[in-house]
Amino acid sequence: MTTEWHIKGPQFTNCNCDYGCPCQFNAMPTSGRCYAIAAGRIEDGHYGDVSLEGLKWASILSWPGPIHEGQGSVQIIIDKNADEQQREALLAILSGADTEPGATHFNVFASTMTTLHDPLFMPIDIKVDVDGRTATVRVEGVIEAQGEPIRNPVTGAAHRAQISMPEGFEYVTAEIGSGKTTTTGAIPLTMDSTHAHWAVLNMNQSGVIR
Figure 1 (tube, rainbow, N blue to C red):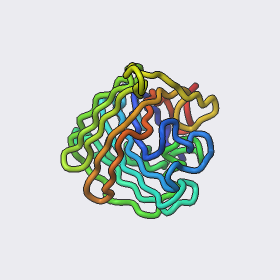
Figure 2 (figure 1 turned 90 degrees about the vertical axis):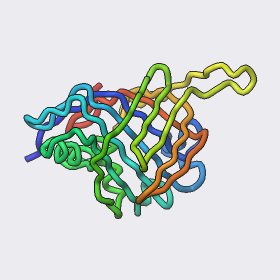
Figure 3 (figure 1 turned 120 degrees about the vertical axis):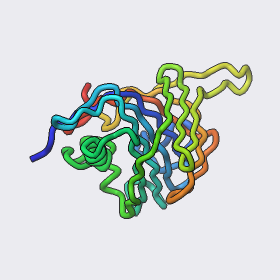
Figure 4 (figure 1 turned 30 degrees about the vertical axis):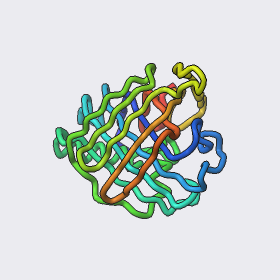
């Protein structure tokens, strides 16, 4: 029987595609392959009777081609402050377990993975302002990431754009911006001035709550 769960809170994602990310429109990735980091903070959440409130998470993901062709690699990072039950609960959600097939991006991505690196349990420093399109994510020795608004190339003014996904498996509306990330360790990645998006995740085992 699937354990009932729910998480709500801000998420920041930076991938290697151009602004807007063709993957959001069922198109091929900008450079032929996909890689990304995502990180979030749970402001309200539970997994069965286990509270997830206040916990942070991050993941590093990489595919040799488009996501749907599979052969991906992933490493999940869980807040060091999580106790054993909370760790198991977050790993289940982030790895797509206890979820209706295709209902969340965690579940969809998990179906494309062939290499699952051991999870890390570390302090995660994350600051995410969805409306302001700013973010910083730091996991010492593993992830250094930041996000900011896209800038008008003439005036330097902050540009605002959104993607709406009425039937999406990740968010309803995402703010779009620019990201810069370096990761080291099991999945080393580098991104600079590439697609980033901010969204408030609000989902359960059946998908996005609209």
